[in-house]
Amino acid sequence: MSSVTKPAHVFGRDREWAGLVRFATSPSPHVRLGMVSGRRLLGKTYLLDALTREVGGFFFTAADETETAALTRFGQALAPRTGGGRLTFATWNEALERLLSVVPEGLVVIDGFPHLSRVSPSLPLLIQHHLDPRGLARQGKTRLLLCGSAPGAVGRNMAGNAPLCGRASLDLVVRPMDHKASARFWDFDDHRLAVLVHSIVGGIPAYRREFVAGDVPESGEDFDAWVVRTVLNPASPLYREARYLLAERVDVRDRAIYHAVLGAIAAGNAPRGGIANHIGRKSTDIGHPLSVLEDSQLIAREEDAFRKGRSLYRICEPLIVFYEAVMRREWTRLERGRTEAAWSNSRATFLSQVVGPHFEALCREWAMFAEEEVFGELPGRVAAGAVADPHNRTQIQVDVAVLAQEEPGRPQRILSLGEAKWDKVMTAGHVDRLRRARDLLSVKGYDTRDTVLACYSGAGFHDDIPEGVRRVGLKELYA
Image (cartoon, rainbow, N blue to C red):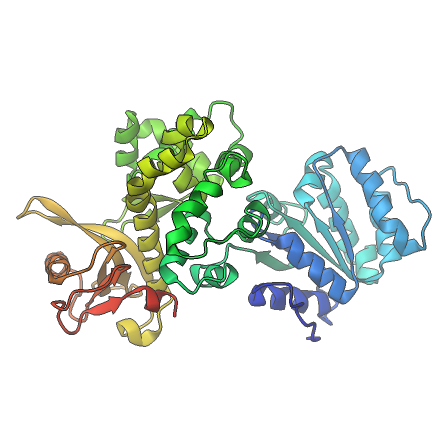
């Protein structure tokens, strides 16, 4: 593979950059088509533009416009490669033929491809023809990268009987930055501040660069003021971003039921029955909204660690959690400019319904990618779950259950049981609850002989926690 240095202005994305360079510089004659996808505002265009400049390729950004307008702009973008003048195309077949003759080798990037394929449904089939053994793309050395943001839109061109199925040599999904990369991106040394900010904006680069114009809280003491002047400020793009996320992914007129479902999940109702009870509906009534939100990648369904068939739902976008838990209930005050009062009235809710669950999710992510020595072996699955305690007529919530790979014919081994508390110092009482859960699971047939008990805390640990219990604090989460 040729060496193409990543420009200094591109933050992180080493894995993505390596994959793109491998595609763009591959000597194989079979490497002709690549797909890049991921939600908007992740920096896909920024990344692909940097790659195109480094390798001297051709870049075209599609827009939500008519086929005629798209062909006009495409001709304008391609004209400089022919020495100037004006290029006009009546069809995409003409445009592709000229493109492949003008750029017979090297990289071609079409960003916003779902916009083009929506108004020109035959375009994927035309690209397929040019990728065929006798097609123009095969005669030259052109490598075509198609990029899009709409969830599933790019993937649909590669699935089943789609024209481009089986033809791509690259299928790169760009994802939000994890909490550690986000902390570096925001220049945070204070891990507690990093969690607070990440619980609102997640790992979306544009939220720092464009949406808050580089306004970063200077310290933990500045966090409240930062929330007021950015996320809760009606003049800030972040203020209505959560609404736009729902509007662009859920194509329905009446969004009330979807907001209700999201609000129920944000309030801590993870099981389907809990969501239904919270909004006053039957469980069967919310099947369709849950499916739509899941297909739109706004929520994810995860199986309870200890009860097969019991699903727990979580919201994928931190900003939507913040909107549903904090902003929507204070919307009247916010719209009238009572921002400080709205935040003061919501801060306790923010800590309990936003930061707390977010911290638990970060702990599960840390556990999933922990090194082998942490739990004795690499985890097979990490999830949350509830353990029924019949004697006390209650349930013990396990925030971080680390399960080994399942082995046919053997009991499921539990590598670790953990409890996570964002703003509470953990004590021996938390460990006692984990021991009780371990004993109950052992009675149910789980293998708990080597189970590691773990306490995860954002506030610290009391000295009475016994030896042998793993303590995971903010330092470990960000190591």
